[in-house]
Amino acid sequence: MKKFGVIVLVLFIFFPLFQTNAAFAQRKRAKVVAVVDGDSVYQVLPPDAIPAIRKPVYVTGKEASAQMSAKEPVMGLLYKGESRAYSLWQLDAHEIVNDTIGGVPLAVTW
Image (tube, rainbow, N blue to C red; front, side):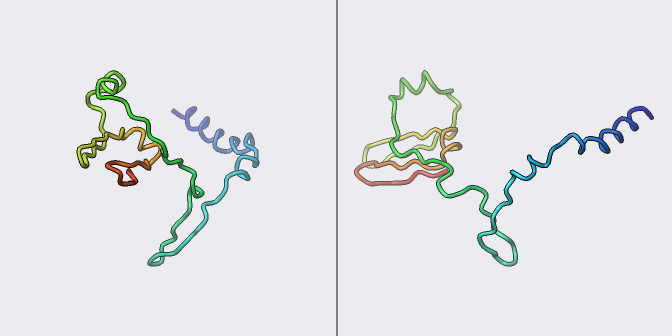
């Protein structure tokens, strides 16, 4: 057990010597964009860093069954006889789908 403690101590002492400051210099600090009730609000990503799905492509239910798990969660919408199902794993990556249903423009967000 003593050997393990000595090895860990040596790593903590010498590990910083193997790192360059370049990696730390490239890391940007998050920008404070507002203060609300004394708490800072940070901008982590720049505007438009997560692209919306602007022209969604749909498949039939049969095609979707071949591509998706039966337990895969979707966000469903039925309006004026038209239906849509938006895959939540795709919304995790894009967060928004700009779409039109029944002639009405809408933004599906997650």
